Image 1 (cartoon, rainbow, N blue to C red):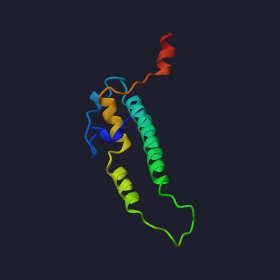
Image 2: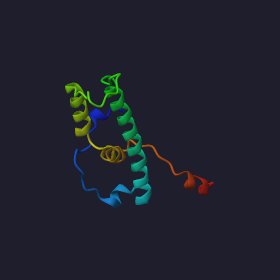
Image 3: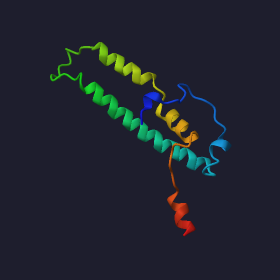
Image 4: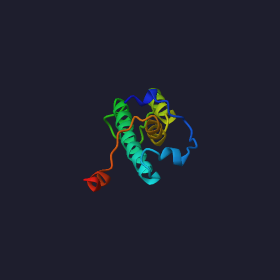
Length: 110
């Protein structure tokens, strides 16, 4: 997914917990679903950022010669300004873009 086009808010917003938990019937299950998705998003963003910053990596590891590359700083600032993974995951959950299932509940129904 392209997180750069996410419609998630940049700041924390207040959510009605009862409304948020309607799909699952349990607020703790809802929070677990959102947190697992937020961890996935964070891992994807980190690997994407690491890949872009790898282009600027120097071959020598000299602590005295740490150079700051303007493009590298701009890339880092761009990722800092993006919505946090938890906000993106919450927005995906509210929009119905997350697929989830409760394996324990499915086992009990059999």
